[in-house]
Image (tube, rainbow, N blue to C red; front, side, top):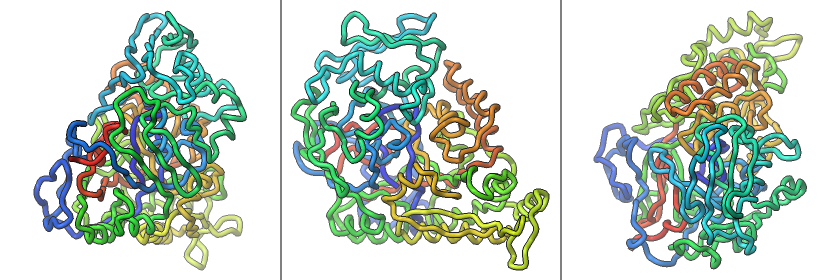
Length: 568
């Protein structure tokens, strides 16, 4: 799994990622409190549970960061650079976009939003009925092609994301569909957004922008494939080179804000094992992981720091409701009943002193205020007998081979997983054994990491382990995205009118905690359809080259690209 820098395109859409790929560290006792810069490689104690209210990213002011230098990183290949589209909406592309595309807002550790003055000098409600918000754009803000960033970018972003034109495939239409119009204000550097229906928090919209050129249908659907369009960027870095092997960002000479501390940022596309070897050999400067084997391997490199924090990611199992036996809700329910979370976590977090609450939500991290366990009773505790009863009630009969069958066909389901990490394979085998105990046959299907985005986009899976990364505390706005019956980001392909109706309620509530309560009610209804099951809440382990500043686990806190660098 990869680091997601929030927020880039939108604070509304969750970003898709590969499920966690490891576990471990034979540390059972509680060790010393973790320093903000992390532990040295030669630390011998137990790694403690991190604080939920602290960042472990070596926070440094700009004055304490060297001018210059290169940061070498890795990521998973995503062909479509159109991050706000359903095909490009991965955490990997979110991170790449953050270096060179407009990021109009930032979040602190707890998720409090602040407008980025390099883009927005003021954003205010100028009318309550109808709800009207006026954005004043920084006079210096230009796209890299020299065109001013003005109200037309706001208009284009709204038109693409509001769901009214089927030529566009936005990752989420939540909030955008409530807007009546986007018009020029006092001048071209002012955008006036008028809502047909109030939407809260309205601040979650327009945290990123499309250039007006994106309105062209062909450009939108095809123009970003393997093409980042640096000329439409507007950030502290720009793309110097991008191909199917790597991406190189360099300082943007047209950037009007604080000069980036780093000269260059280089990403290489690598499989999991190659990433570990690259870090071990000092070819890259940062690695995210949750594996004891990897931890012990990287600690052999002495010039590093280990940073451990909470992740805003939740690993999940998605059941493709359009595929084979999974069209039957009874089968999906039986899978949920047969899933042994305790055993799975022992495999995934073997030896780790990692004991968070089991996740009961795919939109809210377990540490967020207002979080509830929204799982139905059948998904909260393993019940093999119950799973068998569910199948038998639905007409399945046990075969001589120990697997259920119906209409002469064995109940076999394909489990598609990615990468060459040993722990990923171990987790797949654990799932297979759990389901075998319930009479469900699992066919394992392993693919390269680079095929993840394409597999998801084509729906070429039956059971899919994946993850959702929360870019903000506004998870209440992601119910429609994940569970909506017409959402292109609903990779379970399961939904209902009840869920669709309940999913619209949170955006009508201005009070954050009350909106979260409404979202919990909607998610409870969605999870009763058994299209998906939260697996676990993984830790966020980072191994970094010593001295890397403003990079590491930090809750909802936005990584400000121009402030990343090497500590003096």
